[in-house]
Image (cartoon, rainbow, N blue to C red):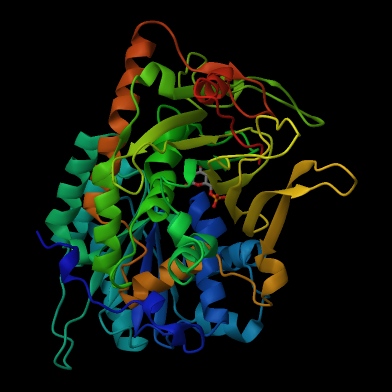
Length: 522
Ligand code: BG6
């Protein structure tokens, strides 16, 4: 099996000219499996159009949809157009669409149908000949993970996973893009990686964690390593604890097929939040070459574990029915498709320790949930109190703990929270905020995460994609919490119900209160 070390060492993060001279991929075709699904319609097809609109796709580009429906190319093209009209970020331009539409094709078939792969290979060969896509193919598996092994082995049997001499002294490429969940625990994650790697070398596997494609997440690296003022206080000498929150106000109506039995910890903590933790906690990489960045993340994962006892340092909940603002909503157990006895958690919180010199003794609290107060993702470094306060004011529990908050979304930016004198005769101190906002500082709108990630797949630029080692280490970190909850379920207890529109179950608040801390109210 090849490793991340085989990957090319070209990384746009490394090259400041990237902003002004964006790289455009060479000729290629992108095949999307599961093209009738939500992700394809809401994110992938619009992102492809947005890339075309920004002039970032090669002239010799083709988009091939693969699904069970018996659609003609023309019908699929209309489906893509509707998705673009509804969800694209950039305005619709007829000439861009016309050029893109020339390369849109559809292949119908089920994942196990050998003939369908023959048809796909023929279609790709036609496109190579007609549009000059050069034999370079990316296969995006926007399908249930249970189907990954089947599709990978069919791609292999039909010869589509193989590379060939490109007639120019080089090789064509064949890449696979997979969406999480990458397994449901360490053992299944390893098994999945083994299957995928038996067909595609690791350097051709692109695992999407769309959080890594977000501008604000990449800015975390700029914030930490392009500045001098933050790094000296970015450690256990100054930081009391770190809170990473990913909250959503939506419920799970319509997502039972994916979510029931998966739950918040597997859906979000294992991937998005642990990646955010790694970027927050890691040392400065020697460069932004993919290998260097991954090496630092892997060091952090290997030093990270859940804080014991798990009964006090984990919490999980399930949203109940009630009022979310002015809207009456049903609880999870009454959502369509969920088993009325479901023990799937819709909220999860864990406490982790990172056993390095920089972070020893600093808990990292991670939480995520559906039907919470509002949609917000943030990373907050909460600092220790000043060692001495020569003020008369009795400071409340929250006052006096400085915080640096990276607002991942929405309202992307950063807040610094610090104490300031209240105007007047008294020396009274109150916490205030100082804000940086992307929207106010830059005229350009940030691209969608999927634009960046699809472009990187076509460029063969791997830095923003977790390698299998990271995925497995993330499961190793999370598995004890999953086992702990499974044991509780077997003993008859389940996730604690919580009211919609709030900030999760009481046990999550207890988890921090026990240590004299509070969750921030984002
Ligand atoms: C996905 C999860 O990875 O991220 C969803 O599967 C979640 O459950 C989504 O809703 C949130 O993404 P974003 O970009 O809106 O924060």
